[in-house]
Amino acid sequence: MLEDKTPKKHRHSRGYTILVVSDDSDGSTGTVRLGHVSSQLLAFGLFFAIVLLICYIVYSVMTIDGLERVTVIQSDRISALIKENESLESKNAELSAKVDQLNKSISSKVVKEANAESESAQKHLPTGAPVMGASTMQNTRDPEEADTIEEALALLAEREQNGLSPDDVPGDPILYFSDIAEGSSVVAAGDGIVSAVTDDKKYGRRIEIDHGNGYVSIYRNAGDAMVREGDEVIQGSILFVVAGNNTLGYQIKQDDVFIDPEEITEIDG
Image (cartoon, rainbow, N blue to C red; front, side):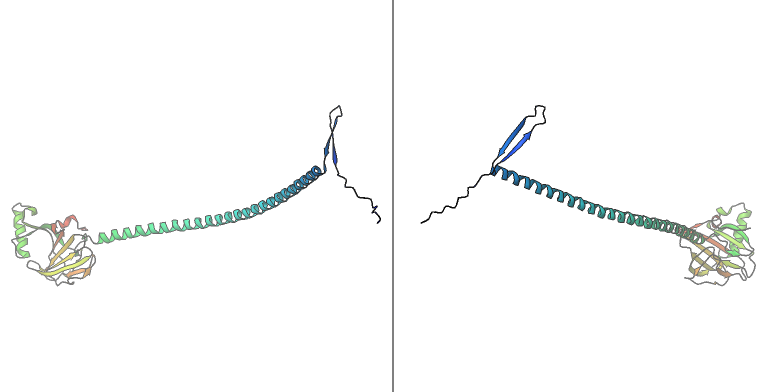
């Protein structure tokens, strides 16, 4: 048998030597001998370091790109919010103008309503003259003991001759309107509701108007009544047309108490 004379391969262990040269003036050098395993570990370490560096760079680039996108998105949102805010400010200005105009309208309406209420309240006061046309007015009292207007006038004249004032006469305050021209009108002194139309033993007929504010005006005359109980009247509405008896007895109650009519009645002339 022939022996195999093929030369055997020998594995050679590789090694690396790192030469370190100093920059010092003495020019000293140093060497580091790395074995096969150490050199591989160093190579792998460098490889991983490079990979990590590349990953870090890629990550940094992606992060910066992402931040730029976020910045762009936020910038767009800020621009949109600024425009929306400007739009809201414009609408708010318009609404404020409308509110101001509405407040002015409401204030004007309140003033008008207040004036209307004041005018209405004024018209419901029995301040008007109860007779249309010329007449003679006497502020006195309605004698309780007199049964007719003639007796009342005679009694008042007698008391006056005796030096007594009207306040000394027992009776309720009254305004006498005499010498009224025939065909003249007795009218409502203020707005209200006719609360009574009755007979009157001294004057013939009696009309009472409730003005709705505590005041009641009373008109006493012999003419035919031109209104009925429940009628709504305004200041100046005709209550009587004076015929034969040209005398009117006019009285006012405030909260069911007779008061001097002249204190509230506005008489022209």
